[in-house]
Amino acid sequence: MPEIEITEIHANLLSKYKAFMREGLIKDEEHFGITPHDDENAVFPTEGKEDSFTLAAYSGDNLAGVVSFRRDGKDREKLRHKGDLFRMYVSRRFRGKGISSLLIEHLLERVKQLKDIEQITLFVIAENTVARSLYEKYGFKTYGVEPNAIKWKGKYFGKELMVRMMVEDK
Image 1: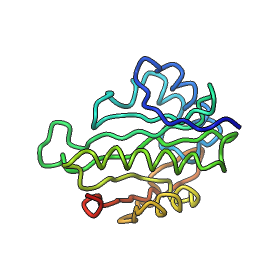
Image 2: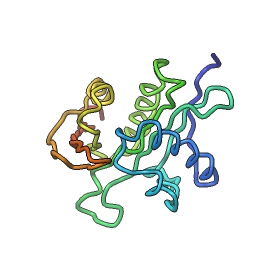
Image 3: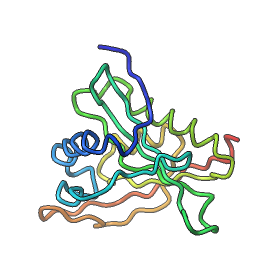
Image 4: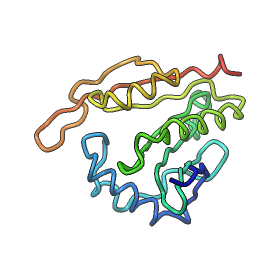
């Protein structure tokens, strides 16, 4: 297997990004809060700025995984100390190779360069224990659970809210 390269991607790769995410939204539908239909007309998730970016993991020419980050409170001063990790997905064929860890590590290193981000929040489907364990490995802690937050095909899923304090890292 080729070396894994982590790089930032931008809106010019929207169609490639959407095709990749569509795979996840179909094959791992119970791990997302959105459906392929919800995503059809969505814009690229981030703005290509230092505090709004999407990282991609490539294995050779193959897109293997993605994760996005954006500052909370884009236009609200009282919320600008926070950011959100969202839309993390690694293709099934690349799982078990440490790509999720690489993506999170690169995201955290980049966020550390933002002097005023004090915490990162995320949500994970409560039943997705593999993802939750990964986030816990990187210091995210659960601060709440919303039961029955998502209803899909007659089944309910909880939403686990997690936070990682960044101030200890600076």
